[in-house]
Image: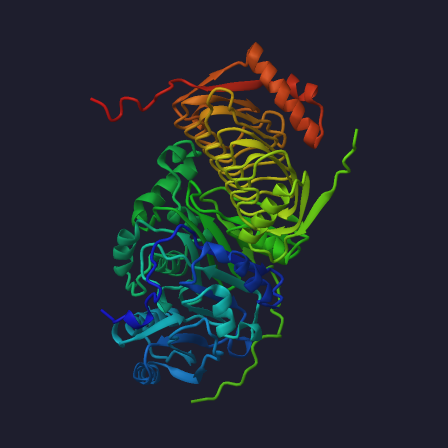
Length: 381
Length: 252
């Protein structure tokens, strides 16, 4: 067990009455936009959180390195970083690396080292192991064995920025104003059952999957044990982590369409299944039988994202809020409508989805990612 | 006789924290203001909480959660949508929403009235209650999501189903689950499986029709429409089959 004391909640005020905030914005035309509006929107829900976690996922972030896996890695010490880099050189071809630029701010206390590495996977892997599988295995290895090191994100052309603080403070700390993306998700944390530390902030991520979550996964133990059988190791000490691995398993490895994966996570009640037409009933029963251990029990509203897609989903009886806003090619998801209207006063449509039914934004066919992305020169190692 | 010229106090809420906004409101009300408008409201919570007396507050923008919580008398008009918990435990007064409302509108309300032009989210009217002359009323123009009137213990809930096409069912399930007081009137179809098992169905009778006429007319007064035409449609009445459904749950 790693020592997390350095990164724990320095306020020691674990319980207050509040709720997390989640926000997502996606331009389905592929236009990259600055996160200024996203930061303002999540900051508008400041009072939902308590400053013990904030974070962002950005897609379309590294067009100059879009073919490489961008590993964002948190190290609690410089020794841990050096050890990690040795590991990376052994298992990957590292094309570039640098410390993620930050600025000193009064709000952010005891930040860990956060570095990013643009890597390629070597050839000569076993036939049944894809490059993505290889990445997942190495991420699990780093998170479980190299002391004091955790991988925050490991996808292509995207990254997660997160830490202990209010989300607007995290945005300032990581200088998010320099980035652009076509999809942003954001989270303000109010930790309920687990420690507030940098790894426990949202989004949770594996490959290019990210999840921000408001709620509690009471099935965490069952979900975790099930995922362990497929090689996923939970190391972040927070329930949300299982959602990222569950969606990777269902959608990437088992190749299920999103609508089906959503039915696994928020499975319809048996009594509702009985009223379905026969074919659908058969399918839904089969899903509940095969994937019973991936049912997410407990209250949740989540924004799940990966390259080209953003998904909003709540539990079946919507015990946590989620509201949708639409304007032209942009789709917003938020815990509160006011946050959307703050940054988009002339919404064309605002609506509240039904519990358990996914809201999906997808890049339009033929969407071209605008080139105005991240252009910082990375020094080759 | 002196005539007092009515003045409207206007408050720009942009960037103002909810605590400061509510102090400004309390200040204005204790200074005798009878009309207050709030501009650029973006998610401030608890607007109008704990306010007493006859004051009309008009909100432009999107008020935050628990709008009018514990309110005791004022009328709040929202030019936009309301978020979750609108009218939470309100005691008296009125909230008129020119749009939709999120989850748990009117939760635990013990008096006052809420008119919502369009749809509502989950658990509208959850555990609203009544005592003698205190009787909360919620009128919803559109449809509702699940658990409408959950654990309802008193008051009147009216669902007009204005967005539904002819013959279309409401989609809400678990309507009136745990209901043990009050009454619901619903226009538009509902299948039996959509109801909680504590709920009985009846045709509205004389006094029901009077109540319906009164509040449907008020709804149309706020949002337009012809009450007579609306009242021609079939309504069903939902009532609690038992007043203490769980009375014996923990007793031997």
